[in-house]
Length: 365
Image 1 (cartoon, helix red, strand yellow):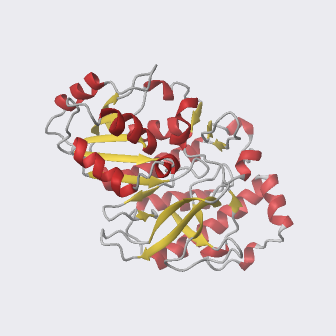
Image 2: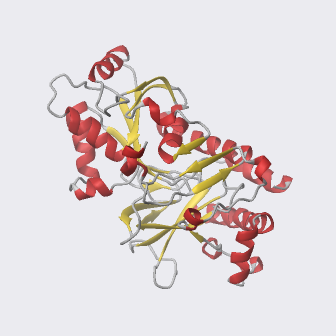
Image 3: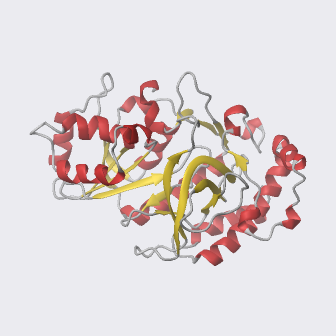
């Protein structure tokens, strides 16, 4: 990557993570993503052939919606890279069962570092800058291989940066909650703010459901729970986002609960749910909602396929991806929480798409 593009990427970390009005943000992103498209065209032969096949010309780009996108499923069939093998730092894999293909995402040190910086900017906006005592609703075995992570392992390791006294709440052998350990953690940090993290279905099954009838389950006085992952299993059980939050509040006294939307195919760009239930795009990423029939960008209030864009992926052409998720734009620069830019919600996976939520494949870890 040339020096100008590298400086442009670094400049994003000096901007307020949710403070830029959408019009200005779109203008900056369009410029940066044009440069990234050119970069990947010059360094990834497969990506170059895709652009050529569609007779795509960079000179025609004037708006964010004109940036070309790849279907996210492409990464299940091809290992696309814009760096030479010697510069590969790590390879991330999406979660999958034995019958499913997984995505393989190539990172160099620069992209990995940018991913970490972006995550810090986003999470600190919700947790603050102090490292909090951290309860991880998973078992410790999930992060043992630090060279090839699943989405789940990468998520845990990335968010562990914001915690201290890391305590894994589940037992390695059975996935059962270690109630004695959880109670000891709660007692040790009584009166302090704590950080709890887990993947959505696992929080529900191995925390809420497993401890719902236990009179010794702990109550947390001041906890922030961040969770993510596929909602399909919870939807099958008729568990809504509202019910999920109500149960955590009633059973454990946890009132600050934030979901986030993201995927291993686009590193670092996670979209956090605010206090008002809206997902927000950070300054270095954005979403568009597209009509599945003609690919036009849909207005606020209309559901379509989610496209995600980010300035962070420099080691592979993942800067503009069409997902298999359905969502809708809720508003622009108007969220009651005060965060600027686009806000949106996710409805779920399109029909017949593979379930690849990282919490839906926990038995494979």
